[in-house]
Amino acid sequence: MSDVFYSHARLYDLMFPGGGPAVDFYRAHANRQGGRVLELGCGTGQKLIPIASDGHPCVGVDLSPDMLAQAQRKATERGVAVEWIQGDMRAFDLGRTFDFVFITANSLLHLQKAEDLVSCFRSVRRHLAPGARFVFDVFNPSVRLLAEADGVRRTRESLSFTDPDRGTISVDVAETYDAPAQVTRGTWYLSTDSEPDFVIAPLEMRSIFPQELPLLLSLGGLRLADRFGDWSGGPLTSEAALQLCVCESDQAGT
Image 1 (cartoon, rainbow, N blue to C red):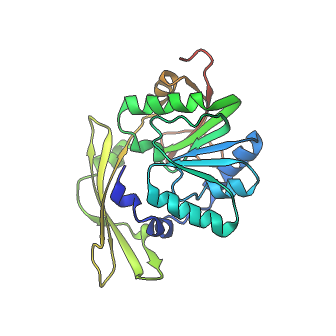
Image 2 (tube, rainbow, N blue to C red):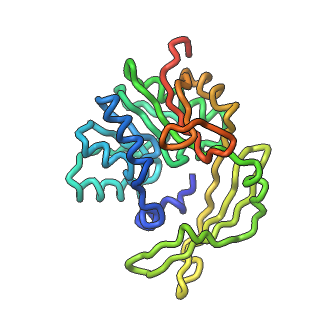
Image 3 (cartoon, one colour):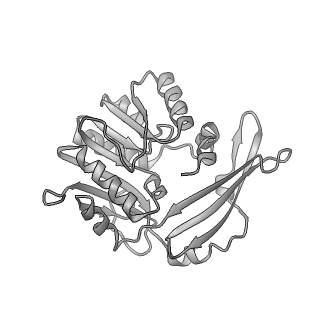
């Protein structure tokens, strides 16, 4: 995980304001499951705080203290109680089980090695109550887009945002793709007209291809119960940008 990228939690919330169909999807699943909710890689609580506001006992785990501090500020402002825990999703023991566990916004892709993904899935399985569901979303890799990661710095117009303190902030990204590791290695640049490159942050994300995902889950003692290609429950196709996975404990798993 990029410590630099996630140390600017307030700017992260401005760049990625949250809301929309992803929040609605996870909120609906949490309400359907009922009971206790755990989010891994919870960040600033964009998904978990709305779920907690529905009355679910919620725990959020994240590796970044800066993101957790921002999450706590937001929860306090909304009068919502959430237990925030600094921890590593690769291996954790919270001493309790949950009815709904989720990882959203590609957070799972910070785990670059297969053994780290399997370790995470095994930890999740140990925390699933009977009948619980584990849901996560990761992008559906496009070979064409991965091949276009040529290391050239380009402006991401869709990510520009306004900071009350700095004004308009532009976002540039330069990325290369390491095919053997299945990892996109990027550098993000945040700038204003008067303060160019005031943040320079590396960010590396793994690709998980659809064919390997069920095997990784199986090695972690989980079973893929359903998989969608969008937030409305559409099928996973080669054109889908998203792999939205609904999992449960594999009773035959280890």
